[in-house]
Amino acid sequence: MAETRLWPLRRRANPYVPGQGISSVDARVRVDPGKANTGSSAGRIEARDVTMTFETRRGTGLVEALSDLTVSIEPGEFISLVGPSGCGKSTMLKIIAGLLQPTRGEVLIDGVPVRSPRRSVGIMFQTPELFPWRNVLQNVLLPIDIFGHEREYHTERARQLLNMVGLSAFEKAYPRELSGGMQQRTALSRVLVADPAIILMDEPFGALDEFTRERLNLELLRIWEEARKTVVFVTHNIGEAVFLSDRVVVMDTAPGRVDAIVTVPLARPRTVQDMKDPAYTNCIFEIREYLGVER
Image (cartoon, rainbow, N blue to C red; front, side):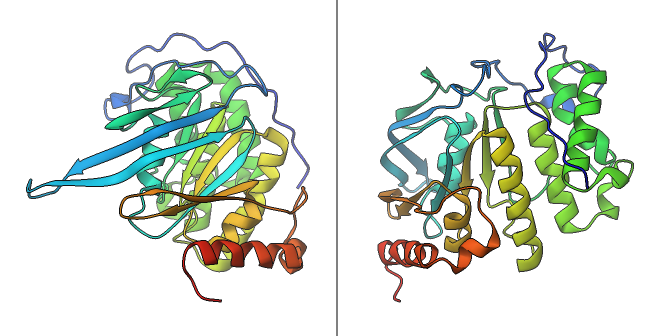
């Protein structure tokens, strides 16, 4: 497959027109413009003393999901959050995305407090969340329809992305006709099509088999190397976190907090051969020790 360069590919967005070119179900999403992605300086994330408290389902008390979490992420950095279930990784991702407001503390993106979802932030969930009545190309173009962006330009961009992830022959296929890996590649293309400065990924490959997961990790790294977006990646897989990341944020639970931040000592670009490097293995075991996992 021929290499296709996609960045920079930016055009001025039109003002959002509710329901323009999309179904009433698709039109439910509303976002604030946020700070525009103006280049490599965009995409800085600062979490300051973030605390999140939830009421129990029965309303009998409060549960502290996050406690005084503080971390800074530089533009273009690839950061992974790892930790046991219940440590607040996904909650933190939703706060960065503006889908939740912390009980105390704040998150800033490029110096602006996050109060609601914004166009400069794309999010990819554990499941692809594709609309079954839209084909692959239409699913990728969903953010463009919601934002009211220029359709012709972004249709070409969507096709370039589908070519990049090996789905150019499936643009007219529907989600039911795709494998799990193909659905996730469609979802990744949908996140990238609007050219966000920040990409949030909540265990996007966790439900896939090991071989498909490894291929998508390599695909993600290839795209990241060219785009240099800020990526915050949630995973339970320590090896995946080390292979992908510049730094790994190790979280502890009860309540969720930062236990350590480990810098990955591997050069870029990376290949599967880096998994043979003793530095890769040592980094995995360092993180395992923070998590209390025996060698």
